[in-house]
Image (cartoon, rainbow, N blue to C red):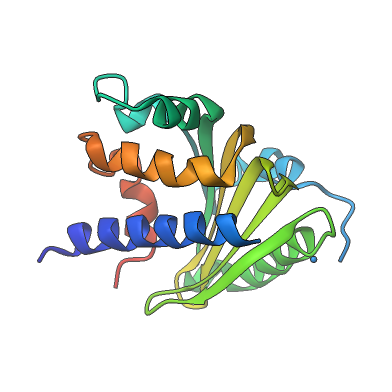
Length: 187
């Protein structure tokens, strides 16, 4: 099985775990995650891009009313990734610590921590348990770098995230737009 397909399966499995955790169920920094994104979007060590919800190709899929509601609550994904090299190892350590400090803020509620074969990951959210505005996925590999993915929406209901995942599975989405990110963590 090609590595790209394996990576997509891992991403979908992570998403499934996030959805399951949201249905079940924090420390301080002055800089917000959004400010951090803006401050580093032009930094050559970072890869920065946005993925619109429309990229998931859900317009042409027959959806139930609950799935339509879930899709309508999703806006976009913001991705910021730092690719570590021998030349930027010191900056990597500083930036990694900066992101961790931001995510320790009490406004983020932790959903889970994961130790994957290729990286460590933390999933947190902003908002109320029944009306989430942002899910943040932070993944790092000490040899390759880190990535922060902001899943943005309006009053995302955790129960609807299961519906969203089912809708994505019905679509013909094949991971378009995530190639740069998966390349960062390739073996």
